[in-house]
Image (tube, rainbow, N blue to C red; front, side, top):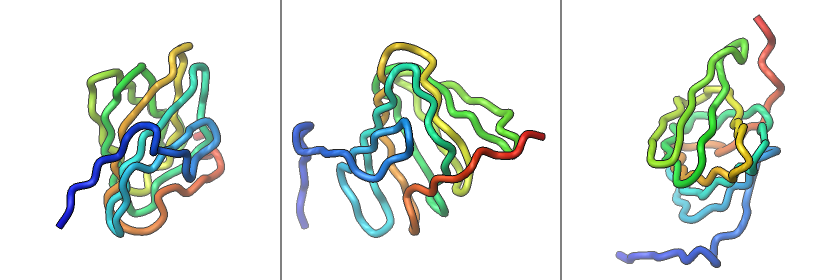
Length: 123
């Protein structure tokens, strides 16, 4: 048994999606916690998180997730709010402001954490 603590200067960039920098904090076989940074004016590449559930908490900033089979749905969230993304949901992160968004995200399940994909076909 142990207790781990990670200081901010110990957290380095890991696997990412274009437009999003993910910094892994803790990782086990079935859970990965990361600190995500989305720069102001950024729209990330399209991606999903395989068979993993995604649970997030917005630390700083306001942004949106665009998703849907035709990329026609949008969910906004801001500092102090929580969100959940179902496994396999193709989406992209959107930061329409000048302020960086910082989010703590936990990926729960197994398989790849990030699967970058092409944009969904317009319907």
